[in-house]
Image (tube, rainbow, N blue to C red; front, side, top):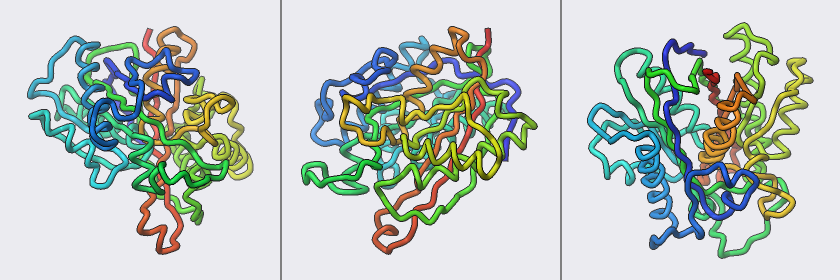
Length: 329
């Protein structure tokens, strides 16, 4: 299902990252970074809460606005009961819609926020999401202190938070449309191969977006997925060509872009809800404002993984939500 938005713009964004992300190839495009994973907090979960609060604070500073009662928040994270987002929002007295879409949370938040603004129900919406490498590892696999070996297909959860201010006021980035995905179960059970889990969901949403809008893949200067990693990226390209006869030419994956796999121990690349918006709000928006890209399709993917269900030997479903972004000169 695809929604076209008449008058929704991303007026400002903010990005806050950890040490691995700041040391990667896109480090200069982020607004702020921490030198360790604790950020001065007692544990990793509280550190992630600080990430979200920092991202929102920097969003207000960059956008030169204050948090008033007219602003609504939409956000989510990876941890159980989206606990990070809830704790962060306890610092604000604003309406909050908590969402969970795993690593596709950012694009789902943008679609929901744009729908509220375009319908006239809200004038200003802040969307945000976050992830923290060691907090996620502890919940979904095992604490990193265990030092368990991992296969090369593993993705490395990004540490970061990203926030965006949506309004109807004309800005340099327009949120033109959004496509809600469906849950796809590719029957993959391997918790260390999220690219294989999510690739078909990405394909399904991209194809539906093109059909709903009547567009060809070449309509976009860049098609961007997140966060399939190198192996999921390859699967997607092959699957799109074999199943839909669509060749992905102007295409990349945010999980591949965030780190330097040659010099950083990140396995198949980045993952996590923060991955796609960090790359998009930082690097891609910079290039869009400089006219390198005019139209970008961001299709963020999410593995809907539950440790409980994995222990029951069930496969891992996935989903992908996509947004069409346009540079306004």
